[in-house]
Image (tube, rainbow, N blue to C red; front, side, top):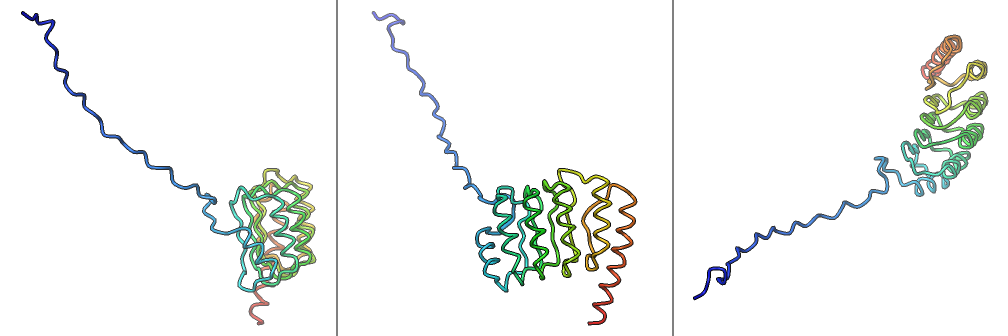
Length: 202
């Protein structure tokens, strides 16, 4: 006789879960900022003075090097077709601002410059402003929201220089002191009326 203990126990087959394949991660986007520009191609087009290129938008490209930004500024010095140059939020610092200031002294086509939300100090801002009296084409300049704030003395010097410029209509900067803000507002209003008169005369 075979005892119950000797009877083999039938094991229920284990429920096998289907193998779930994890899909591979999506390919890494080389430009996660949403800015579609191809930096190297744009630089070459600026260097070749491509007449079809009227705007250079480098905004929000956080992995662009400062050396590349300086190369853009240098390439724009003799360029005669680019009207808008934007490099907001690119970690641009004083050397970049100084290169752009030098470009503004020579370039005669750019009408709008945006260097907001960067690391430019009062030194770099002053260099940009000091280039304006000799520039007759720039009508819009934006350099607000820098990591280093401009002090009151810098703002007063800015206003003195800006009063010598007769083409700037829009300034993207919030003065901390009411005095410079009011003086520039009056000067900018006069520039606007002069610019409007020029358009009416054409």
